[in-house]
Amino acid sequence: MIKMIIALGSNQQAAEASPQSIVERAIEALRGSGLVIRKISRFYLTPCFPVGAGPDYVNAACLLETTRSPSEVLEKLHAIEQEFGRKRIQRWGQRTLDLDLIGVEDVVCPSLKTHDKWRNLDLMTQKIEAPTELIVPHPRMQDRAFVLIPMMDIAPDWVHPILGLSVSEMLDGLPSGEKVDVIPLNVQQ
Image (cartoon, rainbow, N blue to C red):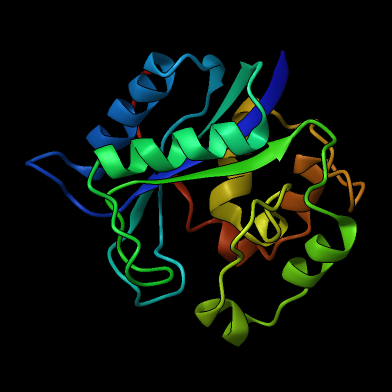
């Protein structure tokens, strides 16, 4: 079994379901797809990124185990997003559901060179370009409180295989202003 970290988010209602309800239902869809969920973070209300791209998000993270490859899991994540009405029209636009494969143990794929390219891409280019292949770990996870804070609930000691930093160390490196905007919701999982 391979451990993987999935980030979940929603900032758009669908079929009378709130973003919080969509994230809850997405977790059930992950379970129903044969992925074994070991831990689920609390849910958090987070500002939309980038600012002005839409309403605030509900974000969470899951630690799961599977015998599937990262690319097979990514295909499953995209299929679940489609089931929830996700349309890939605008980069960083509003989303009924966003499922990202954040990390897979100490795996780096497709290569260190490709990962470095996407990790070091300037913000303006990130807004218009998206990779066409799976990049693990997620190339900008270390810059995003809305990813790292939920990860603290499920895998605080996971170490980024390139940066050599744990989740808690990456979170400590973020400006405090970004962290205070990530607010826990009172949700029982």
